[in-house]
Length: 222
Image (cartoon, rainbow, N blue to C red; front, side, top):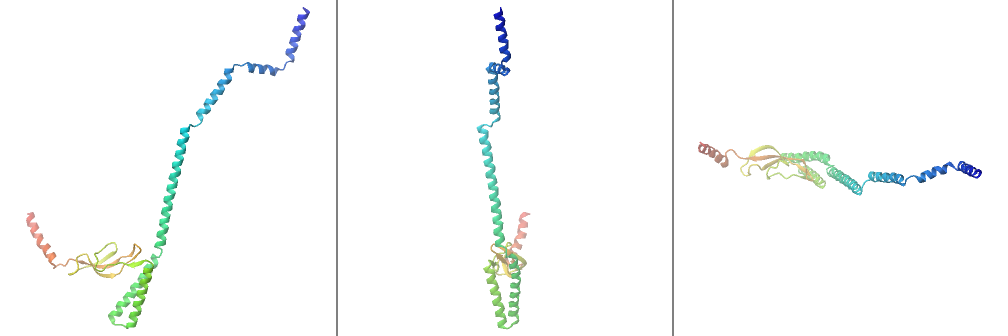
């Protein structure tokens, strides 16, 4: 009996001397394996649900490439427009100067006409004519050329009609006289030519035929 009591006391003392953390580790190790495994699998499935798929990544990449191509095309259009505007600016930069020079040219031609009419000194007339020719050559060097008009059909794009007169030789709608010459800079009109345009003469055969046809047409309609 004494031996049994001593064994019980030794067991109790051994349990008291044992580290309590070892009990916790044993309980943890003795826990069911399914509990820890289930939490790991659930977290892994959540991560898979949050991460994008390959198809989604490819769609986003294609969308980004499309936006980049659109931005590049828009930038290229802006560059072309700016380049075209700069070219037009350089091409027509001398337009105001040419307008002023044209007034000088008009005065020179008036002086020439006056000298020819009044019979002024031949030397003065020749000198003014040389200045006018030189000025016209200067304008041509800057791509400013006169607009042809005399004897040509009237063109409202380059001609400005200031009067209409009947003409026996020229057909109607033809430029019979140029009152003031027009000029172009490259393909742009600086100023149109002021012209007198022919019209059908009132006593011509065509007008008489038209007058005779009107009563016949009215009688036919009756």
